[in-house]
Length: 98
Length: 333
Image (cartoon, rainbow over all chains, first blue to last red; front, side, top):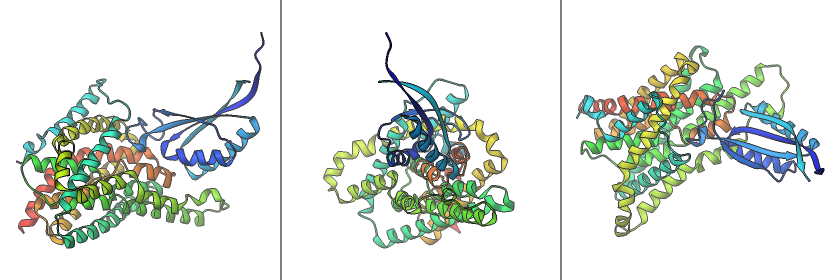
């Protein structure tokens, strides 16, 4: 039995929670209305992020969008990175159940 | 009570327990979000208590306290910036972000100082509480302005084409956030409630806001101990200059605070010590998120390591008793 799926991109962004509202507004501006946010913990260049206080609380923001839209999103996220914001952004191919 | 005795108050001992637990790699940890919840409780309780006392206080002294608190909030970060930028040791963005933390205040350090005074049965003025509210924000503005100037200087000195990207962040929205951040609103709001509510109605809230307060503070400091010890491994990355700054800056801010408290405001040594702690302490609740967004070029690892790992423990263990002795000595001159 074949299952029908569509090829899209899953973009994941790991960053500090202080950027959450701004990122969501950026998503809305480029026409992305759906997203999922997880609270996440970890360590890296920005030091320990263990959700102790707002300053060390990280989120993982995940969106699944068509490839063209993921390009627009990546360009927008690059603007954040160029300002110096600490974001880890990556995208992977996703087969979305139709 | 002096010397080692001053460390033997439950809040400080629980802080030490937290550090110890982390050092021996115990699995003791707080559920996610609990520390945030406890800090909301502490701000609300201190606001209620302070508001009720301020309602009975002298308006002229309150206004003077507000004025000097605002000025301390502006001057201390500028001194910190000058120190960090001396001989170009620290880049301007990290210097701006770090120094903003030192101009602002740490409510937990302040409350530990209150616990220290209460353990000795020493009464203190209530004005430092309103000073704490005032000092939350000005340093954020100073940090943002310093970073903005650094950005302009960098853009002028480099040949890189000016793009919208390098122009930094929306200053207007940041200013609004600096003055409407959660801690400021909760503290001010709770103070207002404490000031306008009838004493009989307030008495019903005392079991929540006063009687369990010190116990909750112990719980919070236990968590702070765990957090402080976690940051020790980042000392190497922060480097000798920054770690030394984390020890020197509270001495400078605290000395300014003793002077403001005793000479300019005429407080008792206990009240002056609380002002000193406001000057000496570094924020780790309100300022880090503001700097993460406002000065994204800075490395968050530096300022969190300094405020939580160096300055907070220093103030709790050494700063509080030392500034109290300093205030007693200076008042006697």
